[in-house]
Amino acid sequence: MAMRQTPLTCSGHTRPVVDLAFSGIASTGYFLISACKDGKPMLRNGDTGDWIGTFLGHKGAVWGATLNTDATKAATAAADFTAKVWDAVSGDEVLTLAHKHIVKSVNFTKDSNNLLTAGNDKLLRIYDLSCPEEAPQEIAGHTSAIKKALWCNDDKQILSAADDKTVRLWDRTSMEVVKTLTFDSSVSSMEYMADGEIVVITYGKTIAFYNALSLDPIKNVEASASINSASLHPDKEFFVAAGEDFKLYKFDYSSQEELESYKGHFGPVHCVRFSPDGELYASGSEDGTLRLWQTAVGKTYGLWKCVLPEELGAENSEQLCPQVPEIKA
Image (cartoon, rainbow, N blue to C red; front, side, top):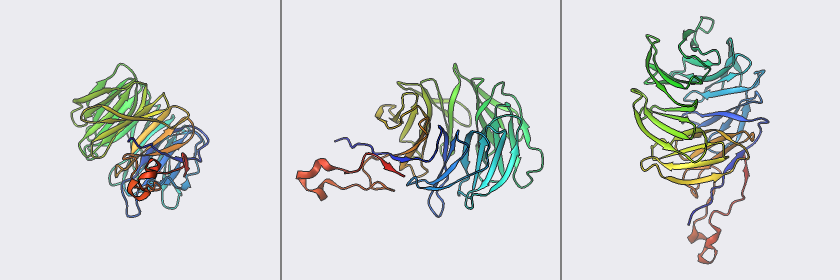
């Protein structure tokens, strides 16, 4: 019997949610940050979606948001031509990094000492956060706005995806391009998995997997709708994808078979990511909400409480997981 997926709905944003990121697993659990066009990025408990706080200070839409591994620092990229670094514990703004155009992407090195930014001025910038007054290193080469830029290969290399329909791999030391992938349409999202050195790229209806060090193709999967974002499970068993048809799709990574699909949002889904423990995935939508979905439907985890059939007695077995359809977090 197929269990019914019951997403947790995280409300609070007033405009489309365009990016989200999880921290690693810290001593107090793991955390989730969301970027929204309302200009007010939010921090939540990752497993329950409970609101912790809102980072106040941007004067325009926030396009990108990230947390460092232990969730002590956050960074945001915004339409007010700035990237900001925040103390994720106190919520205080630590730094404002001025740019010449809209900033779309922010990413910390593993040691949290450097911040990589990118956006509509087509440049990659590397800031040394211990000397923020120093000019950043700049890497030029893309011919259109950069959507996403990520550290990879132990922070020795950088992956960037841009509206010029390319994904480029850069050497951090020489600041030269190592390899370029060219696509027939603009790349909608990119995820890097350090464990396995896999990069997940979406464009059109395609979810493509590449080796992050060589950019050699691993596999391509075609979805039934235009895809805005995809995420690979930490154990590489499944991946999820979502996009223009408001639905979330879960696929088997090895067989590439579609396992399930759920409609929960009331608008296109802009971003989807697995939690660091792989127990859930989060989605952010044009409808202004984040939703949390269980990887294994019916498991007791976070706010999901499930009753086993033998506890109900045979006559009530259809009451599996008696939950309300919407749990507001």
